[in-house]
Each structure stands twice: as structure tokens, then as C-alpha cells.
Length: 152
Length: 308
Image 1: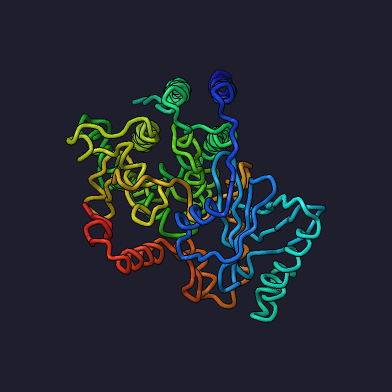
Image 2: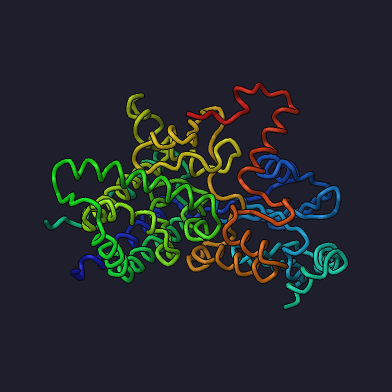
């Protein structure tokens, strides 16, 4: 194996990243309004029936509680795509307010920490408490095993 | 006989073709490249290259060990190259199908599907853990039949190179005869899509005939655009998380399991499996989609996934 076998892929990666950047590749998606939330959910999770919705102040994320108040859908921008996580009891390890930000910590390594910039400290605290009650404390009353896992 | 390493020879072409696609997509106003997504894919490719270097010797030794018990002496005759082309491609089909149907191998393969984009850089978003998950055992029967290990490795390289160029949206359809026999960008777009109609279909490497033979073929429907990614799309561009998130998920679920049936289900069951049947597996997602379509009165010809 020659040094060129290593240098070429590394140089190629650097060149591609540069060209993608020059071509306007650094983009960000947005979640503009409730209609956008419903449209994304209908496409990717048609079984999820959104009830109450909350859009982040920066329009880069949103929350939707299902009609049965058993799950939430978290929509957030990842690059130029909107990603959705359906969060059920057992999926949420923590919900905390940091200023006007609502910080969700999931048990899934693929989307460990999601920050929703709600822009209002009281609102963030209210949502943190509500999600804690719905998806974390609620788990303890529904099934001890899941709660034990979350606590470990 | 000394065979070249086709992948090493193809690296400059990979780079040139990705650059060309970036430029073409830009001129077509297609949003197919996003900077952090592309960087993640390329770093996954680099990591795959590194782990390949680290494990290549072991894989070769394992293949050579099996080869000493070979049933036939095939050697490097002209027909051996034709036979290995077909046999390797059949092995690839089953490796790929099993990697989608069983979570332990899906954990190694999921990173390849984790981009919500579909372009040539996605082709390079390759596994870091496939060799550790022993996915290479699928090819060992080829050595037992009598194909020389170097010929098997050579053909695997040819297959990987072929599958590079089909990761594109810039090519819509190829001539009908080609689409009928070979895996194409259209067929492989379906494979990377999460639409229930398309989910876990078109496992082919080079020849699409295997999907038609084994009932897993679905043609791309121009009326339903592919939505790329995985059922639970990732919230990260971190290559380490991309590579290991499903393994961490397995550990998490196994630790939470109450008995051995559950533990085995979480490891060897289909991705998304849950003991109470509430999990979102490909089959349950497809069944729910069919039920919704049926309730909405959509004609069955457009509702049911078409098999080849």
C-alpha cells in the first residue's frame, strides 16, 4: 500500500466538501407553521393524529402532542431536511428548560439531544414539566421496568 | 494469478463522479447535496476503508481456510469469471436481504441508509461494523465450492464499484432491457426509500433478476416520489453515532428485556420488533399502509406492492 492510497481519498474528501460548500450546500430546513407540521406528520407518520402543536421561535423545530396525549412528535431541522421523532413513554430520558430552550434527552443514541428554542422561559418550563409528567413519570405508573431502565 | 484491487483503482473515478454530480445538481437546481450530510457520508466511507484495511487479512485467512475443503478446483478459467459474477451477486442479494430482515446485521448496515439524501456520496456511507458482525460468512460457500479467495474478493470489489453509480437521482430511467436485467438508479432509489410501498425492497447488487426471482422487486412509481432515509431518521451528522446508534439500541433493549425470548427477539428479530407486537417493522408499516389505502378506497392495483 502506497501513501497515495491514503492521501488520495483524504484529498478527495476535502475537495468534495469544498465544492459542495461553494455550490451552496450549507442549508437549513424550517418548520414554518402548523400546516407544515401537519403535512410532515401526514407524510411520514400518518398514524399520528396531532392535537396541540407548539412551534419553536426560530422555526427550526416543533412539538405535537397526539390526541390521546400518550405520545409526542418532535420535528426538528437536520441540515436541509425536517426530521421527526415520535416519542413514547420510555423513549424520553429527560426534559428540562434552559432559559427559553426546551431540551429533550432521548434514550436513542441516534437522536440523543434535541433542543427546541421556544424563546420563552415560562413556556419552556411548562412544557418540560408536562413532558416529564406524560412520558417519564407516567412511565413509572404504567410499568416499573421502563422506569427502572430510565433511572439506571 | 494476481488480480488487481478494483476498488483502489476506482477511487479517483469516485471523486470525479461525485464532483460532477455536485455541479450537475447545482445547475439543475436540485437540492441533492447538503454540506454536513455529505461530510458525514464521506467520513463514513473513510472509516469503512480503514476498518477494511484492519480486517482484510482476517477475512482472507477465513476464506482461504474454507477453500482448503473445496469441492471443486475452479481456478481462473474464463468461465470461472462468469460463474463468480453470478454466484457472488446471488450471495450479495442474500447478505443484503438478511441485513434488512434481522436487527443484528441491520445494526451494521443501517448507516448506509441513514442519509435523507440520495446521491453518489450516499454510496460511500458504508459500514464500520459489518466485518465484526460476521456478515462476510454469506460468501464463504463460494470458497467451499472452489472459487479461489482472490477471485471472490475481486468480484466483491467489482460489485461495490457497480453499486456506486446507481446512487443518483440525476439518472431517471435507462433502456428497458437494461432496467429488466440490471440494478439501476431507479431500482435502487426504491431500495433507499421509506415509503411503505417501497420499504425493504430491491435488494439486488448488480442483477435485479434476484429480486424478481425471490419476490422482492418493486418498480419505481413516478407518481410517488421516494422519501429517503430510515423509519426513525437520525438527529445527527456525527459519524460515530451513525455507525453505532443501532448497536447501542440493541444493548439498551436487551438490558430492558424481561426474558430470553425478548432478548433474542431484540437481537435477531426484524428491525423495529417489540415483544408486544406494537413495534414498527417493515411488515407492520406496510400492513398499516394497505389498511389505510383500503379504507380510503384506493384501487388495489396502486395499493399493493407490485412483485416482479
